[in-house]
Length: 174
Image (cartoon, rainbow, N blue to C red; front, side, top):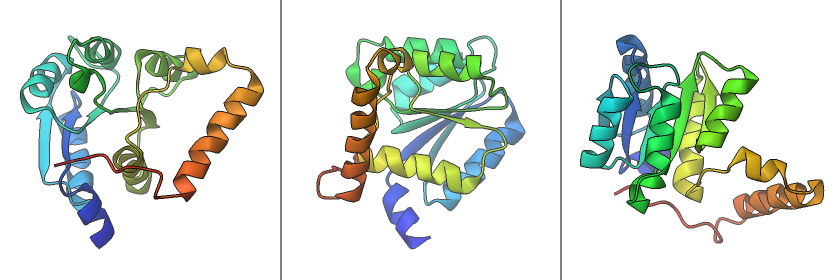
C-alpha cells in the first residue's frame, strides 16, 4: 500500500452519508488508502457548510438523505459561483442503483457512481483516477447527443491518456 499512501496521503476527503455506520466503513477504507484529512457530514446541508469551509479535494456522497439529498447537493455544488467548489470531484455511493438514479446522478454532475456495498479496490481505483486524471463531471445528456464515432473517439482518447502517464497531470491534493 505504499503507492496508495503516497498517492492519496495529501488528499482531503469529505464523507456525506446519513448512516453513521456507513460513514465509519468509508472512513476506515480511505484511511487505509493513506488519506489523513477526512471530514464527515450526516446530510447534504452539513456537507455544503463543510465543503465551503474546509474545501476537500474529493467528496464521497450518499444519494438518499434528508433534508438535502445527493441530487440537490450535487446541483448546489455544480452551480456554485466559486469554480473551485463547483468542480470538486464527487463520487456517489448509494444502495439505490436503479438506472434512473444513475442517470439522474450523471445529469447532476457526478464524477463516478458506485453501488453499495462498495468494494475497497473499486473505491481506490476511482479515487486514484480522480487524483491522476483530475476528472471533471461528464454530463450524460451531452455524451448521449454525440454521434457514436465521437463517443468512441472520446473513450479511445481517455485510454491513450491513461497509457501515457507523461500526458496526464496529477491533481494536487495538498
